[in-house]
Image (cartoon, rainbow, N blue to C red; front, side):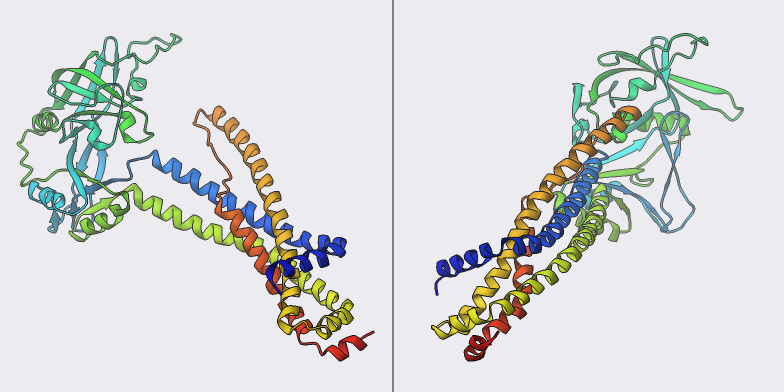
Length: 444
């Protein structure tokens, strides 16, 4: 018996018992739809989480900090001028010296190594009547684009007396002379404007000493929802000079080391591996990629759990298929005997009943995929509307997706439900195939 003959027999047998087949397939529809909806929900949540994570930093970057006897460093806020670096006391010190930076550059897969320093003194930036305490970072590159940032206005290139600012920096400016009840002035347009940076320190008697520096804003960065949004970037050498002035001492990076180094990796898939190598060298390495990996692992487990919940419904449906096939065999015992009497082999009978069981699973799976996909789209629309309303009330960015159904999921669900149906009918089909023709023909 060829495949087309088998298919015609299976379709004909199922069409004779439409009501029974439909009721049995409903269980498969429910189970398959549950698998599609729940797994789609887990995938949608994963995509939303990873999309949000992409906004907190470049996944090809590794932030490397010195190691102080395993105790690490801590960042403390400078007096409005950014962060200062605190150094725990320890004899086991691993500093980020220039020779260490060369070792990082020699690691296969590393594109660039960029040192950076926070402004350690207090600093106020002024523009016309407005001022702000800003986060100032000096970087050892002539182009902020090397950190993965892009310009919203102007250029990302740095130079002596030229700065590049994050897109939210103007929003931190305020009028210190504003009277109560006076309308708050809008954020200033700082692009291509000169600003005054006032750096101050205190002498041994507590007297304030100030230094006034004129800078030009040559670029405004695109929003990243990360550190660069509220940061003012300056050349590393200029920040070093200001730190030396405020700390009253010279800095030698070959002895003192840098506060932090950005290691840029060419291939995102190698970030974790290179971060592990840097950690093995005795330094502290952090990358957003590690968070992404942990999130992906969590959501994979979540997909398995959600899929397992749907599979329970499929298991119940499988029992229904087995029961339907067992009852069908009892009703068609004489038919089975007649088929064997006219030459049908055990394999032919087995194939017919397995085909019928698989057909019920396929029909139920097809219905479940359609119902699951439609339900997923409905949930997606409702969730998107709800989250958009929440985002508008809270002033944040709305999430674009809540439920996602990749192409492989409906295909997998359809194949899986068909296999469930086939295996559910295995025992009844074996009973039918092993019937003795004479006894089957005499069955009442």
